[in-house]
Structure formats: structure tokens, C-alpha cells
Amino acid sequence: MNMTLSDLTTLSGLDVLDHLDQQVSIPVIDGMQAQGDLIVVPHAALADVVSTHPRSRWVDVPRTGLELLRSAAGGNPHSLVADEGVCTWTTWVQDSRGLALGVLDTRVVAYLIHPEHGATGIAPGRYVIGRQRESGGLYSRVQMVAD
Image 1 (cartoon, rainbow, N blue to C red):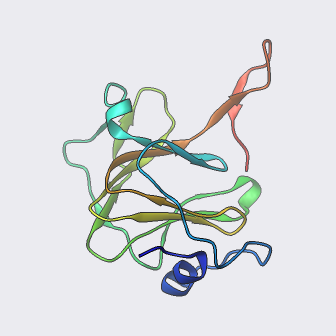
Image 2 (image 1 turned 135 degrees about the vertical axis):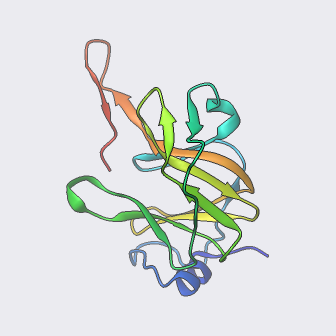
Image 3 (image 1 turned 180 degrees about the vertical axis):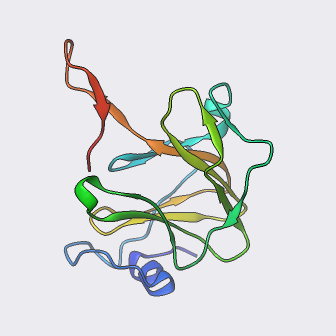
């Protein structure tokens, strides 16, 4: 079944802005994807730099959403949404780059939703969700992406 943005906002109770097409099917991606200042990367691609703590505390991702990051200047939140009991999240991670917000384990499609960007689907698997960084050019310093 294809999940639409309208379906997801109804299930989660989270809102998106009116300019977004509510009837659009949410794409489900099993690889790297970005949403504003967040990036979702399959854990296998970062296994040499990101690991979970041996005593990591994993929490269930609720259907009502788990806020991962609030946009720059306290703006809109990026929330992770999934059916109850099939998706877990931990922030107890070690990341030599200092970018990981946490690790997601999901047995079904999970969704990343943002009021301005809409939603994307994350295929079953293990993923690192973290901040994106950018460079302004050859002599510019690297900085976090501000959404």
C-alpha cells in the first residue's frame, strides 16, 4: 500500500504546511536520503565511524512521532514516525565525525516528516541519522547545514 502525505499526517497527528500536495505518495528509499539539514545513511556505509554503545538504551518510535532535530533558530521539527513496536531508536552512539544524532533499527517502513519538506519513507534496515555539513567553496570553512 502506498502511504500518502495525507495518510501519514492523519495517522501521526503531525502537520505539514498547506502548500504541500497531501495526495502525493511518499517515496520509500533503502539508501542514502536527505531532508533539509538531516541525512539518513545505511549503517553499513558508516560502520567504521559510527557504532552504538554496548549498553545503548533503545526506545520504540511512536506513531505520533519522535522529534529528532528542530530546525535552525527553533523552527520546524524533523520527526521520525513508525507503527508501534517495530522501529527502535537510540542516541547512545559513538561517531568519530560528531554528526550522528542516533541509529534507527526498523523492521517496516519508517517515515521522516517535516512541516516544510513533507515526508520520506525509510525502508526496513539499520540507519544512521545525522546532521549534514556543507562547504561554501574552496576557502570556506565546513559548517552544519541550516534548514
